[in-house]
Length: 157
Image 1 (cartoon, rainbow, N blue to C red):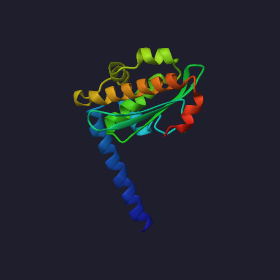
Image 2 (cartoon, helix red, strand yellow):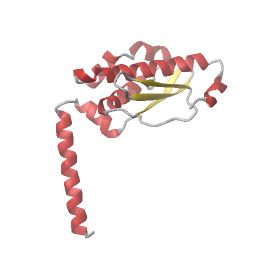
Image 3 (cartoon, rainbow, N blue to C red):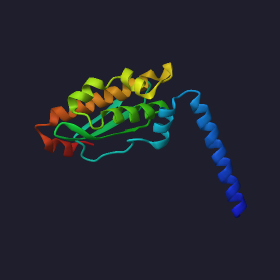
C-alpha cells in the first residue's frame, strides 16, 4: 500500500468517526460521549475487594470491581458486553462512586443520579442506568459480606 493510499484511508476513517460522533450528539450529552470515547473506568481488576456480575433486562451483562481502603472506594471499574448506553452508564456509575465512602456511594447511586450526572439519557435506555446502579450496589454488598473474610476474594472470578 502506498503512502497516498494510507493517507486516503486515514482521512476516510477520520470523516467516518466525525459522522458517528455527530449522530451521537443528537442522542447523548457531551459528557456521555466523552465517557464512551474515553472508555472511562473500563477495565478488569484481579482480586477486587468487591465484585458483582449482573445481567440486565435487555440481556446486557455488567461486571463491577471495587478496590476499597478504610471503607473508601479508591478504585471502581467495570466491564460489559452491552451497548453504548450501557457502557456510558457503567462509566458514570463508577465515576460517581470513586473516592466516596461505602455509605456515601450507597446514598447516591441510583439510575436517576446516573442520568442527572450524564445530563440526559434516551428514554429507551433508562434500563442501562438501572443495570449500572444495581451492579454497583451488589459489588458493595459483596465487599460488605466478605469484609470479615478477606481471603474469599481470592476465590472469585
